[in-house]
Amino acid sequence: MTSGRGLFITLDGPSGVGKSTTIQALRDELTRRGIAVRQTLEPTTSDVGRFISEHFSHIRGRALACLVAADRYGHVEHEIEPWLSAGDTVICDRYLASTLVMQQLDGVPLKFLLDLNAHVLKPDLAVILTAPPDLIAARIAARGPRNRFHLDPTVPGREVDLYDETAHTLMTANVKVLVANTSVATPSEVAATIADAIPESPVASAA
Image (cartoon, rainbow, N blue to C red):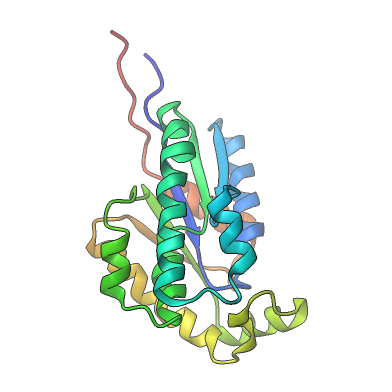
C-alpha cells in the first residue's frame, strides 16, 4: 500500500478568536497521531501575498478581493496541491471563509466573491472558530488594533454573524464545516475535536 492524497483543513474566524493557538495545538495533536502536517497561511509569503499585507490599509473592495483571489489561486497551485499530492495534511490559517466575511465587511457583494473564487480548491474540512463578540472585542483591545477593521467597535459582532452565515454557505456548497466555540474549551480540546472531525485520507493501492 502507498499513501494516498493528503487532506486540506482550513481554519478561519474573527480576529481575536484564538486561531494561532488553536492551529499550533492542532498541529501538535495531528503529529501525535502520526499524521504528516504542513502549515500555511493567507495572505501568503509570495510577492502577491506580501503586497496585500503591506497595502491592506488602503486597498479595499473589489480590488482587494481580486488580489486575495489571485494570491489564493497561486497558493493552491504552488504549495497546497503539491503537498496534498505528496500525502501531507495541510492546515491553512485563513482561506475562503475569511474572504467571504472580510470582503463583505468591505462592501463586496457575496455573489461577486463566490464567482471570483468558484474554481479554488475546496477544503476537506473547513473549521470556523467563534466566540462571543464582547470577548473578541476585549482581546483586540488588550493586544491593540492590527488592521483598519479593528478600529470599528461594531466589527466583532458583524464578523461573528457573517461567519455563521458563511458556514451555511460552505455547507450548501458541499464543504464539510465544523464550528468550534473557543470560549468554552481550551485550545487542546478544540484541536482534539477538529482532529476527530477530519475525514479519513484516501489510500491508493500499490500497482
